[in-house]
Length: 170
Image 1: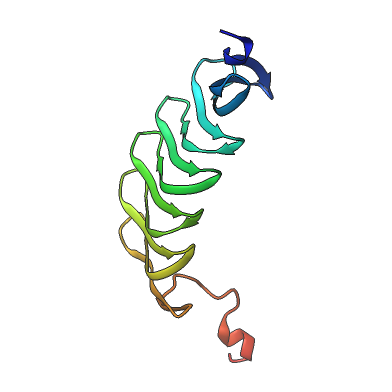
Image 2: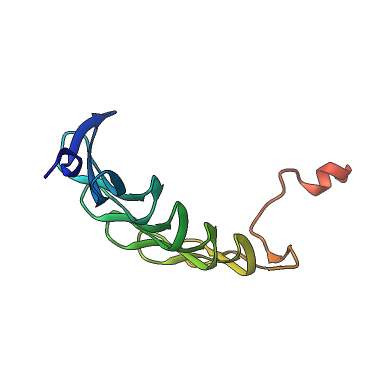
């Protein structure tokens, strides 16, 4: 085994990184898997894959307790497919979908107890169609539709200035 195939270990900003070069041919690295560890431990913080210098394949990040925090995918540096995030208790926090680096389809978020708190729809990175948000108690926070780049419905926003104050009505 020559030196290009050996794992390389070094420290950067308190994080130990282990770079493993996966060789396509002996002189030209094709891909690299990067492992980052929590400072002073052997516990994995994140695993990232690269191909020809671009993020490619699966990315995983972990909570300090070892539970998976985030899982996403890249194709030659561009976000693609599902992004899943988890609370430290192991329950799902969010599921988003990417196509060509942009949000696509239905994206959902849950609170730490597992209740759905957000359901948003995207088309080529922009909000599209039904958009819903709930408070932790299940009551509606916002519920609107995007049609022709306009929002219709309960937006869940408040004016910074009372309208009656701005027009001088007492």
